[in-house]
Amino acid sequence: MTNPASTLASSTPVQSFRVLICDEMNPGNLEHAGYDIEYVANMPRADILKRLPEFDALITRSRTKVDRELIDAAGERLKVVGRGGVGVDNIDLDYASLRGLLILNAPESNNVSAAELAIMHLMAAARGLVRSDSKTRAGVWDRKYLGLELKDKTLGIVGLGRIGSIVASRAQGLRMNVVAYDPHVPETKFERLDVKRAATLEELLSVSDAITVHTPLTDETRGMIGAAELAKLKPGSIAVNAARGGIIEEQALVDALHSGHLFAAGVDVFVDEPPTADHIFLSAPNLGITAHLGANTVEAQEAVGAEIVERVLAALKGDVSKGAVNAPALDAKTLEALGGYLELGGKLGRIMAQLISGAEELEITFRGEFPADPAPVLTSILVGYLSGSTDEHPNMINARALARERGLNVAVREELESPDYQTEVVVKATVSLEDGHGDSRDRTRTVGGTVFGRSPRLTRLRDFRVELQPEGYILIASNQDRPGAVAKLSNLLGTWGINIAGMALGRAERGGQALFTLTLDEGLSSEQLQAVRDLDVIDSAFLVKV
Image (tube, rainbow, N blue to C red; front, side):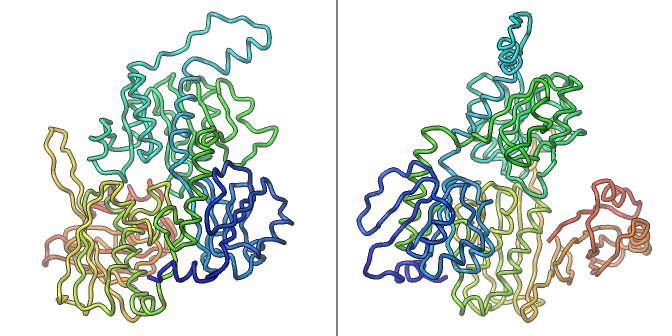
């Protein structure tokens, strides 16, 4: 990897680094030897575009859009952009990376504030704060209203990351029972936090008196709690969303409040912000609303401002160990040697994350003689495995640290020869599962791949040899090795108008267990996947998106 110090620090060897803070924040101390820091709260965009070429680094909040226009206007001097806070939605990451800009954020500073806001919404919903406040202001003195005690109630937490973990601790302080659903977190973290684990979202919903969501907004989590999921909650439950708009479907939440199935709810986030004057939330009964204030406390703002300044200054000197959202590029020699393997590693990690989430151990085996040290390939596997399961942005800098924080043990083995290919990368994941009787057993999954030229190939699934390009949607099915299985499945897919782009077959022995993979032009709904599993010739079926 290129030494960041040579990339950043060498650009201004004599004069001080110049840093522009263009959005309102509390940046703390601005006097640092070797740095000229200029703070202009809410600087007009025209002024930013005009003056940015004078600076080595830019620090923003969410107000300033760091888009192509701004990046192009910056010229060659700008090297670092710091975003005070967690989200980087206001930054064109792809274009910034293409232009060689290092993007930093400060996600940890807001954790306590965000968690406490969720607890506030929970308590306000339980005691009818919004309802009582509006009635009292309207001259109605209603003392007959009955709220709910939270003591001994069960709080279901969706997402046991940093913020979800703090919420769990605060809820336990209220003497609540806490259960969480997070397939990406190992059992050891649940044990450390003394939180009961729900095996499925449905299980969590069925036992919860209140739920709160704390996940990133991804394709997997967008709309994950809709009308069907809210209906699984006990009548008279509470729902809180202080994470990202759209994780709980807005219309479904309002409908559940109108019907009385939900006792009350609280939201800090909208799909589109700010909301329009006719937004359905604004007229919903028993719904507490705040204006995306999760990070807005005096303490959080002081911490986030000082932290992002500290990280930007460190990055200008070459230390990019904290807060990197995108990674500095690998040097050209490494990219030339390992480019295909880096792509393979990311794909293997993403496939494994969908086959077995919440792994406690990853064992990566490098077989054969690689054209360069394969250590970066290990990191790309972790990036793929962690992507979409954390509110961080896993990359080649922070992936190992994120894995350690999650409690994921990573073991590496090297074998001088590969029995079937010149080189092969094999990833094995292990998670411990309880069988319902207090006994645990290990569940493992294995995927492997190689590179032909510069093109990644999938070579192994479980104990079966396969060979296919890991692209798009891949349906992985196992069955007993007898005629007709592929034909039945193909016919079923045909009735849905789903085209098969490629196929690979593998078997342990004739007449024994067999496995085949189908590359599809489009994905399957959960109902369609279940129909595949219900075929009498199919033992198991999984769909992964690469």
